[in-house]
Length: 73
Image (cartoon, rainbow, N blue to C red):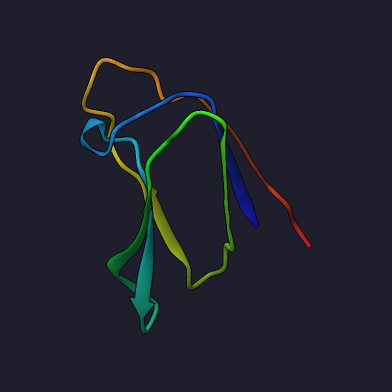
């Protein structure tokens, strides 16, 4: 599991969102969930060889501050 605890506030137009993708045959296809960084929000998602995610570029003059990590089983 990967986790992110957001310590800054963003709007969707600011960039910096966490995008989680659907995949087909091991290739990412479409964004199925977009998580906009919001203060005091905790996000987590499963990480596998067939899961795909990205963090969008921040396009405003703000810092995207978060604590993140992984739990390995």
